[in-house]
Image (cartoon, helix red, strand yellow):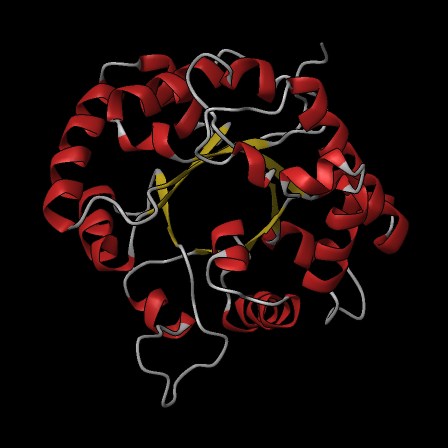
Length: 270
């Protein structure tokens, strides 16, 4: 295995529709106590070797921000509208999210694509809005099980990446510094199935090569690409050791502060 050379390592917690303000507060009290006991983890975060982002449900964003602040941990939103305001009942804009400390937004998560029918065009508008309003988009891509069985993994990923970034006329380093891409095979999300480290590396290596072909080698080398899909304390280290994997997007395991701290601790040994 090739030890990860790109720093920082990014570990993101996607709580999905879990942990309202009360439960989030209890979680964070336990989490902070666990972090304080792990001197290596504290050192890695303090030295910017590990980047930790929490993506709670929108109603819990102020609570998470008040508990964690922004010195060591970052705050992300699971979704956002692409316009700054308007008659869009139930939606939240990026300028509103920034008021409560949000610095990152998940865009195009498979559950938004397949359960809520978000199109590639809508996802592209959201990525564009993230750049316009000054937050980092985390563009999520990944194939369904039937695509994988039909050997269409790369075809699906290429389409999603190209559409997601289609508004860009060029791809400079300022954009690269703000952009994250998360590869999450749909068949591995919440199923207990995990892409093998080799499979995850192949898909993420393909994404990096695709970025290089379109926008140049420097941008491809610098862009941060995460793996997500049934990440847990047992597989985190093997995944992060792959050459092209910059970080992990953690779902159900991030709902348990002990498990999430173990994941963080396991990736800081590199």
